[in-house]
Image 1: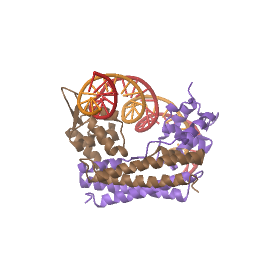
Image 2 (image 1 turned 90 degrees about the vertical axis):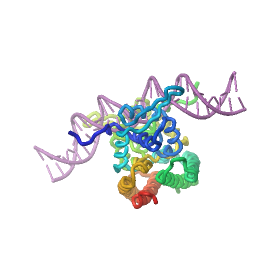
Image 3 (image 1 turned 90 degrees about the horizontal axis):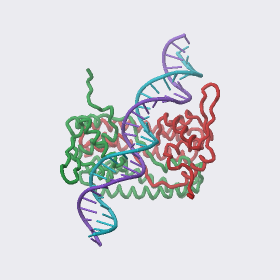
Image 4 (image 1 turned 120 degrees about the vertical axis):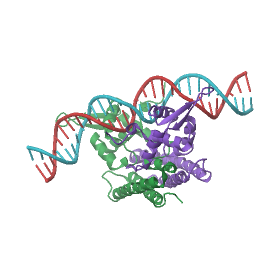
Length: 183
Length: 183
DNA sequence: GGGTACATGTAATCAGTTACATGATTTA
DNA sequence: TAAATCATGTAACTGATTACATGTACCC
């Protein structure tokens, strides 16, 4: 007789992202999740919108979410945590993780092979990366100044960390753009 | 009659990672790729080893890699770039990317929902994250001090950037661990 | 009343993950 | 010679991506 229970084996980070967002909002439609992701976490943990429709369906099947579908009009589904879903989420949130941060970045991957592409390519890639990170930095700073509704201190702290990373990235790529040989 | 050519539509970042590594080494087995990834890029762009066996096979099929299989012993396959592969890689390396960095981090995701889990959980998750990032920082610093063979300036610069991020992460999580309420 | 952006999904495909399997070397 | 670790793959499954499709509300 096992002590642990629940379907945790089949849950992915996306599952917990959905559970967490629904838990945070109390109640949410897929579209609401999409908006939240786009506005905040999306910057450091993106999910395509189709997943935000598919995943809640799965979670309902697992008994972790309840859904309430409108009978008229758009017939849209509103999700909320079941007690089992709340338990599963809490348990996951309390468990430290072994993995660190993955800095997934195609531009860094290209730079990694910069020795094969030559200074011209490196300079162009770097110049563009500067712009990309500048924009992101501006977006994060705007969010910190004018936080989205329902944002709490943890979320603001994370935005601040992300902003710090972006500002380092700007400096980094700028240096590369100025001197693509890293002389 | 199209001007562009090649199978670039079906190539993923993993494909280019493999092409780039093979190009960098001149010639490589899957195992060699695995070692390189584990030692360097793995920190910011990880790939499971099974992909490093499957992907080269696909690339051979697309005519971008050539393989040379030992007839005796381990019958291992050694890959090298074909001219088409070199062209495809160069073209990709020269093209700036729109996407920025994704800071994929399960611990940050948990912290994002920290308001739902309480200070106790947050503290424990943070304390563990400090350790994880400390170890990574140490590993990056060791690499910078004693670079792997064949590492060039670009690769060292990236390691340095990663190290800077890790040291910020240590500070960040340490602050959270000390004061999980972010008072 | 026609266009455009918002809103809400479904379907097909496939890369990536996880798990399994096993031969070759080294070490104790 | 047994154990452990290094080296080299294969197989099955499925979550994620990409593309398609359509309804609804607002605006000019």
